[in-house]
Amino acid sequence: MIQIVYCDDGHEQAWDEYVGRHEQGSFYHLFGWKRINESAFGHQTFYLAAMEDGQIKGVFPLVYLKTRLFGKILCSLPFVNYGGPCADDPSIDRLLIEEARSIVQQHGIKYLEIRGIRKLGGDLPTSEHKVSVTIMLDPNPDALWNAFKTGHRNNIRRAYKRGLTVRGGGVELLDTFYDILSVSWRNLGTPLYRKEYFARLMKAFPSETKIFVLDHHGVPVSAALNGHFRGVVEGMWLGALPKAREVESSYVLYWEMIKDACERGYQLYHLGRSTADSGGEAFKKKWNAFPTQLYWQYVVRNGAPIPQLNVGNPKFQLAINLWKMLPLSIAKAIGPLVAKGIP
Image (tube, rainbow, N blue to C red; front, side, top):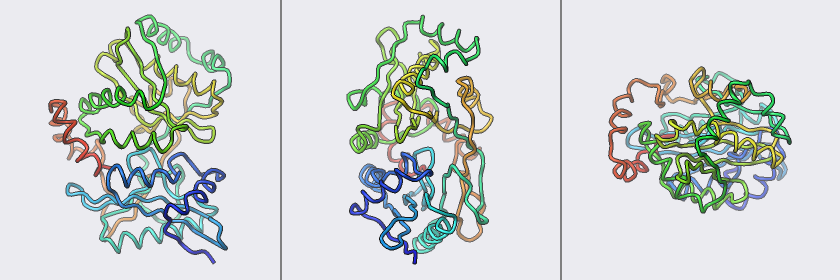
């Protein structure tokens, strides 16, 4: 008989072993994210496991956000590209979702948001406004280079001639990465998480994370933080200073990260999620990447409509425009207080 267990640190090894061997398992499903969200933000978590005869048959990581601005939200998973249940069969998916539904009711939560790479069964309200854009890698990066369109290769060559270089590393590059991301997100009108979030991520996964910094004549202008798990590179965060657009830094930064992934033997590179048919998706497709539909599905209390907590909602446009005008010091000071409540 299947039982739903609320997991603690004692379940970490069995949880990660299950995620590591399951085809639906991803970097974001690893147990370390539980402690990261708890310690960096103070969020309560519910890491559900479906157990039978002492063996895990499915897992469902959930993070509970209690915010003054947006109310109570349960998400799998906030702040990252996707999450959702990882289970042996659809019947276990349903059991895990029903347990999550009971959490929603018990805590008076407005809604549960499941960010999935597959569409779950049942009648869950679904939004399909996001895609994940992925590159098939090759051990020889020249094979990818030769497959690019001539114009795209020329753009990369031209960008290199502007004095651009890329360095990769670990936590020693965190300050530079965060400084760039702070400017980039403020300019986009988006509050940024506290630096401690990224520090705890890199401490939890020192071998699975890598920072890339692009310099223009020795001065950092853009940076990215990637995750690595089971043959897949996850493009998680990327930021750029205004100078980066002027020198077309994205061409060099992306190509250097793609080469690094090829040379390290990875098979897939998820370039991160994009809004369908957006400029971001179009740029990623230049690398011969293909889009995969993401499914954001909901359990909503009292029959409410699907929530629209995203930058495309006109209700937030004034707040976004005002945030862009904030002095950087103020945005960095108050941003983390707001960002931790925006999944």
